[in-house]
Image (cartoon, rainbow, N blue to C red; front, side):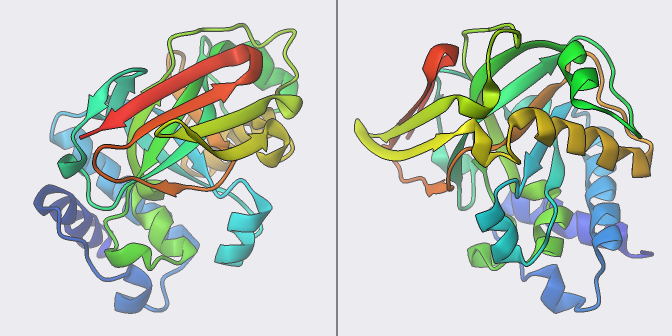
Length: 258
């Protein structure tokens, strides 16, 4: 797409000015999924040129409900940058975001590179250093979340911020498909889910990502954080909100917004 750079610049300006833009699927109704990923990669390059470092990847649209909403049969992905990273217990200024929502998920931190094609669940298991509970703060540069699948792909998978728990666990001896999640907003239980909601298991999510990225010759690198996809729905965030997500024996993560 010859104007991928132009669309990427629009996203960056929307992010900086905190003023969302019209959906790309309205501005360019014939946009394809491949072109949407070209815009995302152009956005990533512009971020790198501004001095930001890629620290990992995120996977979205892992649940059947979200895929049905977008009328697709596959997940999507985006890139995570150094400035996005927070730790459990941190307080985040909501004014730095446009229209944020919170998702509860597990993060894998890698000790070895993974590069498709033909990656298997065993390949992913062997490459994981540890797992941690996480929040993904999704955000959209597209006005009012009026997004189709190509819009969220272009917009770096609607990435915002990442909050990682401090409890690091080995992947072994844990059945990720049966891990339970309770998410609390201001002390009240609002969401419950299990790991099986994420493509059957978060491991399958990472397998999909490694194989999908090979189309663009992009590996998953040692040290990278992989957000594997939400156990439940995305919850809108208001000023003053406190969220906690508890993942069975894996531990919990919490964050406050001011």
